[in-house]
Image (cartoon, one colour):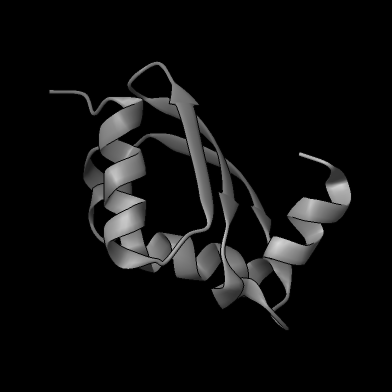
Length: 81
């Protein structure tokens, strides 16, 4: 069974504290905007690794592709999103 965007959102939220989290997708390919204070001081690759860690094995089995925009709360506010 393919995961829904809401399920992917819940998976991320369970493993990573988020101030904002939006996930869109079709069951295999997902786009996410993830805002977390946990990203403070981290490079893009480290931010993505935090998200992948929150998803765990689901990234290998259930989710075919995840495109993500990872922002700190300050970056998100600055972007006016």
